[in-house]
Image 1 (cartoon, rainbow, N blue to C red):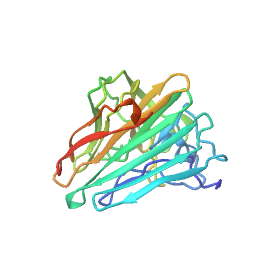
Image 2: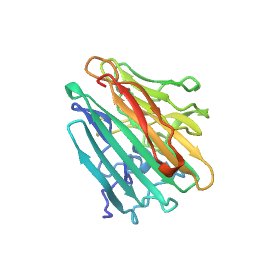
Image 3: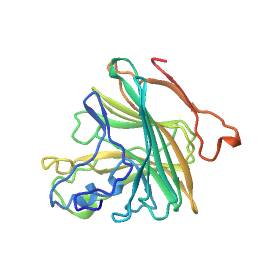
Image 4: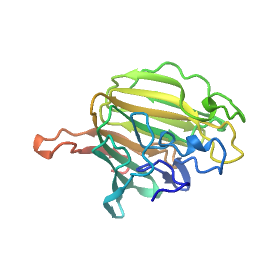
Length: 272
């Protein structure tokens, strides 16, 4: 139900791997000005429609499906978070391997609106990391500027929104973004085609002691009139041996009678 502490984050993704936060949430900071960003849809791992916030009063979520087995667990939800959308639905499948390794297959279907931004940020490689960064492969972007240091400033442009935006148009499917530190890493692979990729910096404060903390965002964007998107992505934490679990992945061609938005993915992982 609506409430003062709720965030505008229906279908947001939180990913904890072996006790380590891979895809997180900025939390809640009482009545601090930073909460305008922290509670916004724009600061979460989800699809942002028309660069707008989700409706706080008319959102209804529906559980479509859920199962678990020793090899895989899945959940699918839909939401009426955006009035412009006739469909806003996310399916996430966790594939489970040896030594508690996992990766996620993420299918996010959105219909309606003019701009769909499949948004991902990770706490890995944040500005408070001793050694951290992001690398994109399969897509050409301008060099990344240094993460800004705004310390304790509460000016709106310092605590709300994305900046230092770098853009690449018409990337080939299969491009990757890798957030990295010395001892850990996370990789996003976008298997579906998108109109453009945007990489940027944004606020990343989660606690009262993290004033000015910044994190790195990546958006996969589709634009047009009454856009229909089926984003198909993989999320991979780096394994205990330092390697990523997926050796290769591709979308498979399907016959027309499979239906609109149908998806089949072939994945070769280090364990099968």
